[in-house]
Image (cartoon, rainbow, N blue to C red):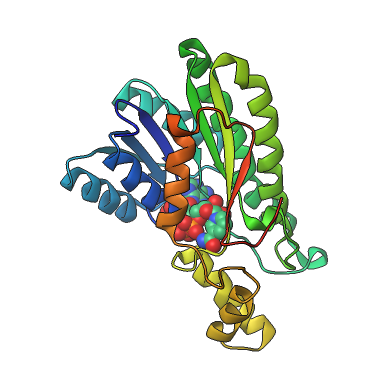
Length: 260
Ligand SMILES: NC(=O)c1ccc[n+]([C@@H]2O[C@H](COP(=O)([O-])OP(=O)(O)OC[C@H]3O[C@@H](n4cnc5c(N)ncnc54)[C@H](OP(=O)(O)O)[C@@H]3O)[C@@H](O)[C@H]2O)c1
């Protein structure tokens, strides 16, 4: 087991990529603390993990709010006593509109959930990781941080910001035993976010969702999207000692779409 005796706080873990990471990490021996806004999804994922003999607990939180970020860290401590691994995964795409039409309040919300929450949660867990001289932070960024897709300015800015945050935190933490990395997934077509975005783009482009998706996937070397499970496996590698010499990096899990 790669994560025996580890405690992982995984945000946005009721569904999608976060759920896949929670399941995989729990199967590798970690106690997982889940969080999101939708109780039914958190209950279902927690029960799935417990049903397979894993240890899981959840707390409801809207990570756009500082108070909720602080509270989930306290609740994870109250339940499992420590946090060894933080995965900043929660987020939504936001409006699919050009910069000149993008509502400022929506821009702020996207930045808050992806970038500000990743910063706040890192700030909250780093002192205990430094005290133990070990720990891992993983930021789930995106291909959008490295490519140029129109109509998602806040999302791309937040995801690119997460890569800067990853490098700086890694630089500060490296000699204190803590590693900080990022994953940039390509299109994980099974998730709600990906499906909703595909439908919106198809409508805007005047084509069917199937045509829109096929056009996008044809630009990827492997010619297909990625699965939540494939992203989770890369996350497991980066959160385990298997990647003990890797820090400050962003790993593309995109089937061959970005090359830096
Ligand atoms: N799918 C893709 O193609 C793709 C590609 C690259 C990167 N990513 C990134 O991967 C991560 C997971 O996305 P996904 O594809 O798995 O989408 P998803 O299925 O929609 O999952 C998003 C998760 O984030 C939670 N969340 C959203 N807003 C939140 C908030 N304000 N506070 C707390 N939790 C919140 C959602 O739960 P609630 O709604 O219940 O709060 C849900 O659990 C995101 O950061 C996304 O940007 C996805």
